[in-house]
Length: 168
Length: 438
Image 1 (cartoon, each protein chain N blue to C red):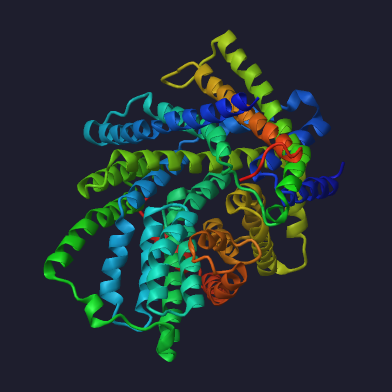
Image 2: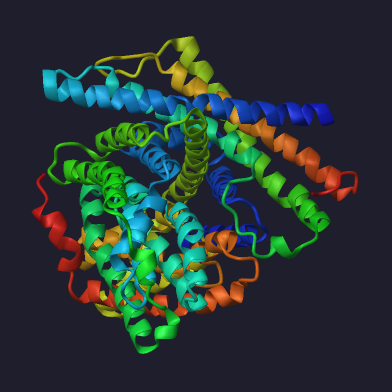
């Protein structure tokens, strides 16, 4: 179990770092687009949608990356006063339940949605008209990594609640 | 269920879960889905993918990762230290000059960095030790940094205005320009307060000695040269938006590339700096966007259930008159800001309040900036002033939360004065956007 949990951490961490490189791509791409528009008067037909797609991938994959360092915003004025054990108990019975409720539905719905796009081969209908499955696929991929990260947290919370893991 | 009951149930469970420490993003998304399920059945649960997909396909939001990236690169290049040094040499002779320099630094940093938290961390690390060493009044020093850092919400490029613009359909460029007036006004009020206080009580902020301010001509030249590019960069980015040359999304891309070039010229564009900037940006973007996703699901469910219409009706039929209702909304925002993250507030409440404002006949652009003025005050006010938490993280370990609250009080008062001025004299906000070239 310990190995699985650290493997999940590792995946969340590294996928985030890998996807962050897209920032450089987006920066150059936006500038290239502006350049083409002003100097040659001919923006690409794919630029806008491509930029959006790259950024969207970062939003989605950033979810698990922010989770692994516990960066998601929460009100911890009360919970920071509780003992680690109490906090772990509340997390097991409230936070993690809420999380799986939302993330479970998200994984399920995004899977259905991505599959629909792959099976039917629908496109965005714009001038460039790319297929929609990459964007929907990213959403599914990001949901799964987020779900896995939530699972790792749940395992840790249970261990802390049972006194089987010390809190640093 | 009637809209009133849904309002109580949805927001009631929302606040309870938040207080239990559930992250904002999960709370809003889960409640949105739960209510969708109970009201309309499992067939409508695809609301979550539809809402997220909307956000994914917005070109305006592209400005968020790019502006955050630009700020991180500039920050990594050590420009804040150089800036502070330069402003200090310039303002140091004044009593309280160091405090004034801190505020000026905050304003300039606000134009480079889109998030207030980063502002406070940097100025806290650079200016606070400096001021304390010089025997500055500790409360004034702490308050100046917390209040100055919160200016980042108002001074463009501000992430808050991008999110506000996207959720309410306002022009982000105009909101950016609308924030400039109040940002400078608030900064001016803080500086006036610090200088007056130190003039009356020189012990609160002793001037720098002649020795400290002396600099060789070569040093001055070097400093000016290293600052010239970044200052040019932020001027160019804002100028491009002001003159209608580029959309905020395009300007952010140019800004990010420019920041990379600045860092390269300053010889600080190392592999490790670049990596840190990329990773930090990714994390910030991840947490911001998931708050937006969650809040979108929540507010969409609430609106479909008739909640937003109920709020609009309730507010507009109150026997308070337009100004009374406006002030009530601001009080609500201030109260919310004490417990909620400001991005969450914007996505959840701006779409409900804007129709009311339009119906009452106020200028929606003016209200958009006012909205963020309120959030900026909330950012500083107890019990959950986020800027105070950021400052606590970098302040000496003997600084307590109570001391921080006390040090923020005079600045909160100044903010309220500033806000009243913006309400009485709308041109403070609306003048710059009105002369902007569209």
